[in-house]
Amino acid sequence: MTKYVEELIAIIRGNLSREELIDRLFDYHDNDIAEALELLTPEERKRLYSALGAERVAEIFAYLDDGDIYLKELSLKQQAKVISEMDSDDAVDILEEVDDDTKCKILGMLDKEASEDVRLLLSYDEDEIGSYMTTNFILIHNDLTVREAMRELVRQAGENDNISTIYVVDRQEQYYGAIELQDLIIAREHVELEDLISRSYPFVMDHEKISDCIEKIKDYAEDSIPVLLEDRSIGGIITAQDIVEVVDDEMGDDYAKLAGLTAEEDLNETTGESIRKRLPWLVILLFLGMVVSAVVGVFESVVAVLPIVMCFQSLILDMAGNVGTQSLAVTIRVLMDENLTTGQKVKLMFKEMKIGFFNGAILAVMALVFLGAYIHLFKGFTLGYSLMISACVGVSLVGAMVVSSLVGTLTPIFFKKVGVDPAVASGPLITTINDLVAIVVYYGLVAVVLIDIVHLV
Image 1 (tube, one colour):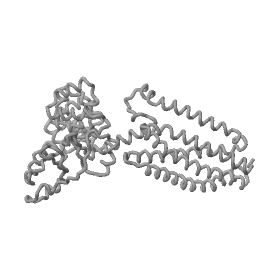
Image 2 (image 1 turned 180 degrees about the horizontal axis):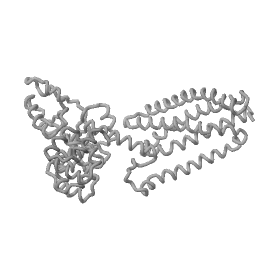
Image 3 (image 1 turned 30 degrees about the vertical axis):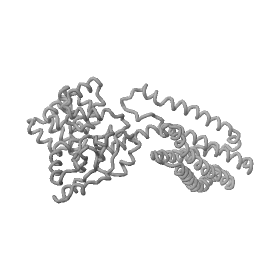
Image 4 (image 1 turned 60 degrees about the vertical axis):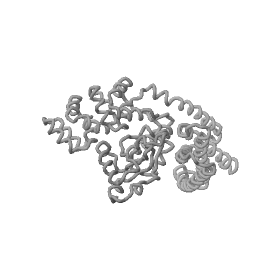
């Protein structure tokens, strides 16, 4: 709990008049007040809602992760007032968490403009960029003078606080470009508005998939980017704060996929739902694990003759798994580019194999020295015998890491080709596949080189 939150709780619980309370809370950020709400009793929160009014409560609710919980503490009429005062994207975030019956009642009580904005955002699928946009932005026409544009900016700024970029449409209401606030402020009256408009300002379409356009949004690094509807009019904008949220959600979703889940699990998800989500992948991995165990069984005679090689099995498996996972992550990220050519994919494959080879070579030298010393000093074998074992481990590392890099690259490319999400399909499989590869490389090398050729028994 921060110092500000402690101060806020003391102020709210003090015997202040409504005017004194509002005056004292004016100095605090809405995010701190939102954090303080969680530490108040329902009765204290209701008194606070009444004192602050719907507009300030709406600003505070925008910072709550579980705004629907606190919204229920208000009457239905008060809920509609708060939702009407919120930015459309924040309102949708809360409404998506309430039950359908309450949602319909609230939507029916909103004013016309707020209702249209909220219904528009609710119409998008959660993986479409339109679901993240806000209708809080400044919009002007391209045939205004600089003076008229400034007057329009001042008029709209009372209701819209995203003013760093002003968006421009033509008389057909189609997207025309954008103007930076600073350029408009310093422009002389005789300057043509056209000279201030950036016609090449980036935009996204409302039905674009988030995964398809997220890199473009990040690369432009603008405070906001317009979201266009099918008729080329501006439906809303996606702000820098929205972009951070989108990136965070996408990373969380990808992390869940790589773990073999279909989405990032929620704390409110039931145990049964979590079991049903995870179990199918675990069953697949069980049978793949049986295959790995069967392969290990094939090399049972190798372990019986040279039992010391068992000591380094986990080392080979771990390194192969780590390298495969690295290649997998890089490949999935690269595959986000839908325009990737076959030549670029082949280039990526050889690059990852080259990285695996050189990293493996460095680790092989380290394994030769340190494992050789360990076997000689602590296991009591001769220096030559120890170096032969450690050399075999080192060469196995190189082979396993090269092949694992190849598998980590080709697996997501294959799944992408057949129309399966590579993050979902590759994540649970890659470690087991790499275990199988590493086992074959390691014990196969021991059997062929140390036993059949060198006769190190």
